[in-house]
Length: 110
Image 1 (cartoon, rainbow, N blue to C red):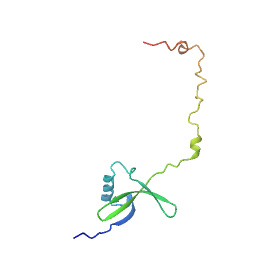
Image 2: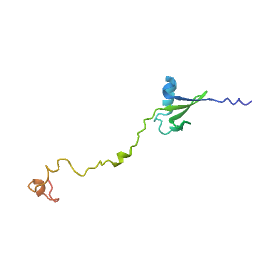
Image 3: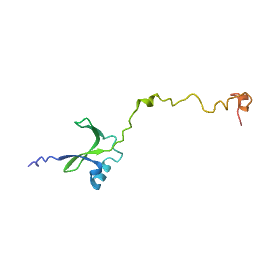
Image 4: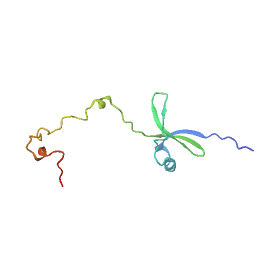
């Protein structure tokens, strides 16, 4: 005799709303973090959230995970992080009199 097909409840909840035991079980299921299993869920109002699946015998959870999104600003691409001007370069400009200016590539200190 076949067992009746009992459908699981499907619940969407925040990780923080789970009991301590369920939180620990979720952490054990994803010991290396949620990155590989995380999915983006789009809501009808245009919003979205990130979640991971988690199943128990009775319930299939979609657990919302708080994600900090690094907002990319186009201004950041235009910043010149590699300024060719070195501050203080004028003060240390080689005047030809220093010991370093007299050395050649063939000179070696022993």
